[in-house]
Amino acid sequence: MIELSIDRHHRLVVVRFVDSIDPDDFTDLDRVLQGLPDIASLRCIVDLGGLADGRIGSSALVARAKGRPALPTAYKVFVAPSDFSFGISRQFATHRDLAGQAGPRIVRSFDEALQRFGVVDARFEPLALSADR
Image (cartoon, rainbow, N blue to C red; front, top):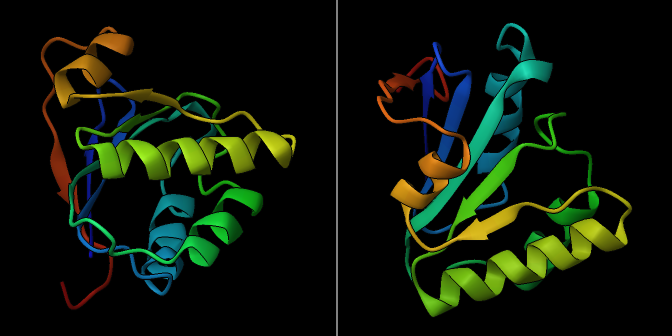
């Protein structure tokens, strides 16, 4: 499952994976992100802290890494607190680089991700993935 939030003042979107990564979630994610105003100026944190070990297929991860980025910005940070999430983040970054696109920076904590963007007083509000959520 994916949870989305945004800090509009800092132009920062958080994509948080909870329990597992389902390739079908990416369709809703792309739709919501593409509908945000000034999408090219947004920065993004992908938080993998809620991901359970082994709950993503390697082929889905590789396909996502090789595809068009959901946000056009190169300012992306992955939060990977566990060895599992760090490993899949490295795999994603490697395939993104091989596809000729900038891979994300990888950090171990959400606070470190905020520091990378120079954000000290974040105020996130939820974004709905679909009308029924």
